Image 1 (cartoon, rainbow, N blue to C red):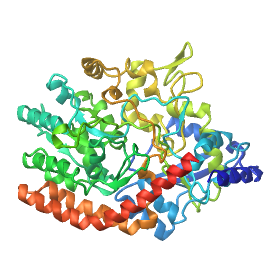
Image 2: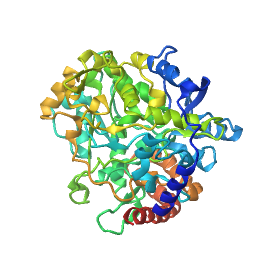
Image 3: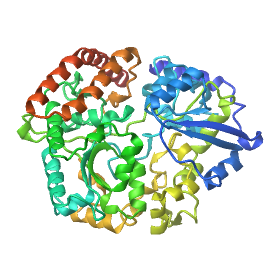
Image 4: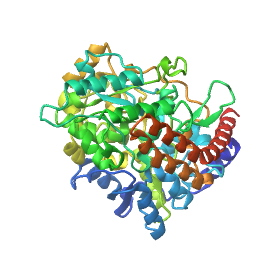
Length: 545
């Protein structure tokens, strides 16, 4: 694979890149964009999009996801209605396998596109497919100089800060402690100050976001996010197995069943749409959930904008305690930097000028434009003092306001485009929230008091330090296309059975439902296990050559 990548890079440097030129020498164009996530349309006079239009002659016509992702992508593929820039969200493999995206490797060269080339060159063996093709440059996970871990940006159990404050800031480490605290809080505080009833624990089950329902067990067993498998990284053989059908998964769903019977989980949680879920979180009435930080960012922003800081969430790295019989489990929720493989913008086969899109990404990945996209305009959105990029409290806090974002940030493009994370060569952080001077000093007074009560400076202090990334990366990134039908069955059985299991009326019904679930899922789980085991070993071999 490494020889193939080297050959492709050498050949690509021979290709003429004369057509990749600064866009101000070209005719203005409208670029159509699809984002595989819901979002807000930017204001027509958004200052960053205006700057892009003035410098590159490019305007964007943006479509955000409305409805089911796979259904939407299926319709677009069937009708061959491809936007120029196509972000398939968590189903991007569907676009790749359907041939809807172009291979980017012929357009990326050390001389013609140095920013893009240097951005991915060290990661190419794990980014390209077996044919040496690259369809999407990762939108996240490529760090410069240092990985900064201020908070848990991925999976965790979340709880409203006010719940911990109410109990005098306890250290919640286990699943039992977590649900016990939520139960006690609701018993003492059944409604908020407006009379709205609190909901103990919400579970998002819709579409690909059903990871909120099916993924927690691996973390309770002490591993970071590998999708739907548990991998033994300590044996040297990387034994891989599905966990949802194993004895160590049953106690988690038993705990959810107990919470459901106590009224801590509402039945409607299993049929909520993503928009309904975000609305619930934004109301401040949901006390806890398992999710990934990025997945409910709009709810966090809404709560902060409303000044409801006590209702915002803190991530907790829960594990099973020893009473479950699985020994002493050390949590490892935080992983080393993981390139977000096959996630972000691809350029569709319908795009009439792919060179111009590459030229745009190349320019936007420059230091100058990364500062604009991430920090804003110097003197307006931040200031520089003794070489440090800083913000006033007003400049920092307004960044969480949804109305301000629509006028002052190019989020729809920035979120899906290649970006720099970590630190600049001068030591400043690429993300304003990762800048030490900004992070603690400019957070809300409530959050300062909350972290200080724990003796912490950042939310990541609740977690163990990130572990070294396994040589296979994170297994959720493996393309399941070769066993797609069996994989779909494997997921569908979980979607159908797990809510039923959680809503079981009594212990006997729970055990019967669990046994029926395991019996039904075992054939597809076995196929999936064997496939993932083989793929993991392939990746380990490539990484260690």
